[in-house]
Length: 346
Ligand code: SF4
Image (cartoon, rainbow, N blue to C red; front, side, top):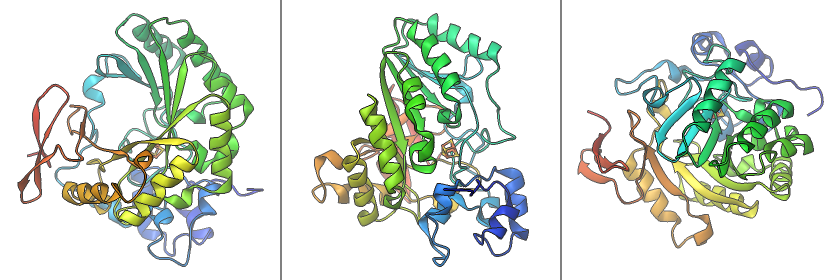
């Protein structure tokens, strides 16, 4: 990607010809961070007004439209945060959010109010100590999920430090990373990073976030191959997005690309009620039809679980078939403890 820098301002986007008129976008950029890496710039088709790559990363005036049911914390992280940087929603696992910076800023991001230069920042050494102490003092925690932000923006040295600290906690058996880096900044995935990611000696999973088959460039595939060869178990994470992957052909190709690269399909997320993202949302009924369309058409290896993060922090619900339609686009979804919730929320 010799010489090309990441784009972080509307001016950068205008200069690169990614937007024609930046005037209307300054208000968007002031609200939600902008970030497009050289690898992603290379994927954008400037001649296609509906390009699925541009749609995911180039800001749009539609983000200024806020719907009444959208919310700052759509999946309820803050409701379950006992100490800074930890989300403890289910008994056996916690999220550890060490950093709120990403190499790219996805326009549909569910944590868009928390990430970016004006977001929640990076944990201070004291906050990291408190987060690790929390994990160490709760023996029911079996798995630590590093998310953010994108934890792979951290240097190998800082990643290694964190992993070595987790190595000392006996009851932690699994470490999991959620990241966009293998796709949007594949050159970052080098031997030093892989060594750091596996330094805990625990079984380590890495959830690769990709939403369109075009994201599997030769460089991204090579990064995934290095991670797999380095001992990381790879699983997938995608968001179902209108205008990006909401047709059976694209979704099927996306899941096949994951499997071809030894990434086991895991979650297909229903888009969350993040502010200014209504132009990305599909209905649950349409999502169910799409996922049903994958069955039979492509291998059993390629079938993701279609999930909804129930607004308010009630956790994930498998909505492949379990969401019950009440008509008029309203559904009843059941959380892991049996509680029933209306979706969209009333
Ligand atoms: S990489 Fe993840 S956390 Fe960062 S902007 Fe994209 S969806 Fe949000």
